[in-house]
View (tube, rainbow, N blue to C red):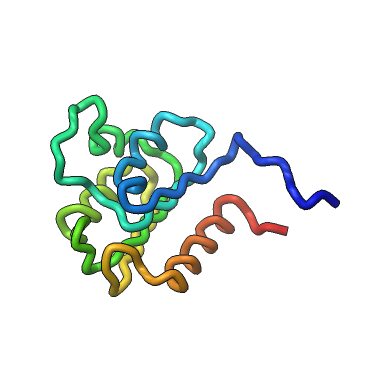
Length: 129
């Protein structure tokens, strides 16, 4: 049995950390091969991007399952003013999106975060044999 298996490019998972999570709505909504997303330590940015590249304008067009994992004490993406507004604006069905907030800073502890991520991947991509 080969050690390397073929990559299923028709069922990709997007993983964004910090800025990668903040910019995720643009990429997720534009790339049809992305079938689920995991956003860690992200939220809406306080900058003023042009409307044609502003993630808030793409968030309602996101329809894939999305897991957001954040820290309650994030200094860059505060829970109430950055994380929750992004989560609410995602166009994903409420049953297919989840926002987990840990008692942590910008990036939650690995052990807690990894457990959530693996459960999400198993739910939407199936268990790895």
